[in-house]
Image (cartoon, rainbow, N blue to C red):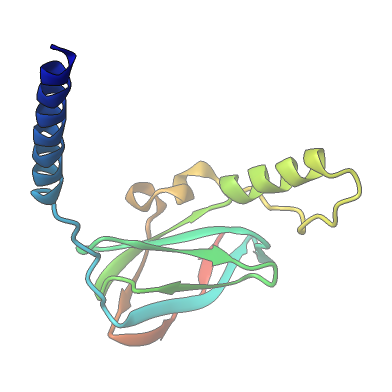
Length: 144
């Protein structure tokens, strides 16, 4: 009796596994299209170079992100081609710095992070625009 139950359980399990695999295969992964465009430059706020944060470049196609380096420069690969809106977010860098400071007593901290007003953190509200073409593009982000 236990043998029949085990066999039935095995058949049901295999059937359920096959259904699961088929359902996963119907939702295909679609990579972000490669645009061949990049955007780089410096980021300043009130004439001071930012030392950390994230730059988001959004357009009609899916957007891309890049890190602001301690020297105030940024580079974002695979940006949309055409008119783009740029956002600058320093909240994550500020939180990372605070986490390092609290976790490691004598840690060498990244430079202090300058707070940029929250409206610049979203492409929907930043108002920072430029136009990109295929290949490398340069745009210095200046926030007053």
